[in-house]
Image 1 (cartoon, helix red, strand yellow):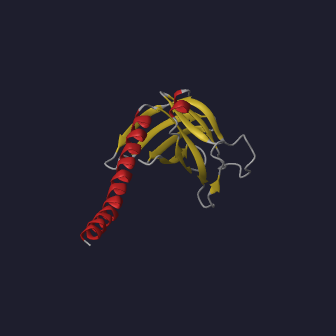
Image 2 (cartoon, helix red, strand yellow):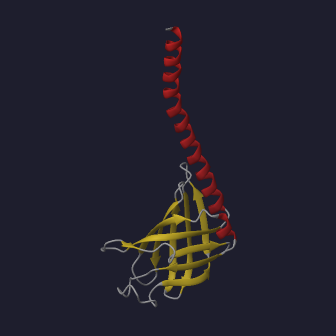
Image 3 (cartoon, rainbow, N blue to C red):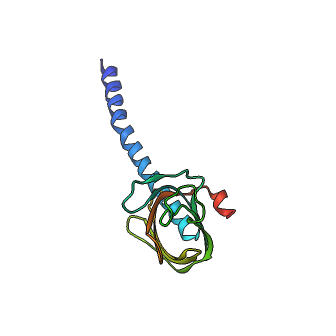
Length: 169
């Protein structure tokens, strides 16, 4: 009978310990991911794949993440984003934010929650663009763009965490 009690106590102890260990493991994983995100963003060589386009006064548009992105490489921006501010025709290529340009006034701050707040401007073919990018510690990102001429636009996406792709940029 004593052996059965010992086994029961051991089993109950295991039931209590396993959730505690998995919670610590999840916390560690979150912390490690936040550190990786911070390293990628502070390197100024990163890519954000965009999945949702949000225009003022319209429903969000789901995008194919492999088609639309924004890349920062040192002091340059490579933008491949959808812009429907002037022409509300999704297949028209002329009104989109496709350009390469040098960055102006690039600033980055990281808050207490390990979220990166990035601000800069660039000259595109449709005029001067001001970018505000927030990269969250889990790798998700929001991009807010105001244009000198035209409507402002928001995008939601994910930071590309694959090192081999970002290093080849």
